[in-house]
Length: 215
Image (cartoon, rainbow, N blue to C red):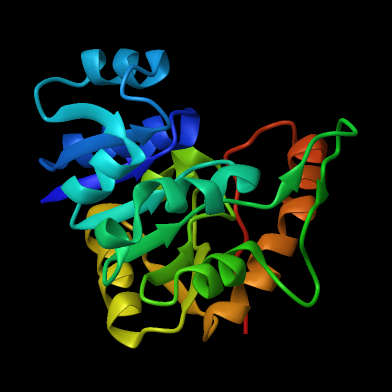
């Protein structure tokens, strides 16, 4: 499958490399077609790894992973072009973290709204599904790094898109416990978990951890 990954940071690189290891072709999108981080990633991942602008990647990909930072998420979709993203499933991993005042970061949207909802309102014909944003990027693609049972969440307005993402989480990445939090407004809780995640990282001293819902 041809897949687009938006974002050249560690999350985009980790997701993209995993997808290539699974046999998919991946184009990493950024603001320019000459992004150095993207070029370095492509050179390390063989012929199935290519780079381009957000518009190039969106046109290439059947499915899009949005791995941009929160402040750049809406702009990345605008640069991708509605003609390239409308009707497609976008797995939104971005978080609305504001590091302008240092650590720990605050959230620039929360409580009554979420970044995922802003994206969905801005691009109503795109099938956004929020997922994978509540764990470290290595755990995203390899949940076995955390022993025992632990959970991944998803939410979105389109039932078929959520089924697609559930299959990706389960069959591609190996997630066994997936909790559906309903429509896209479920992203409020998923994004507001990030301050807790960051505190736990500091307390535990390691990033490879997760939570499990016991009932």
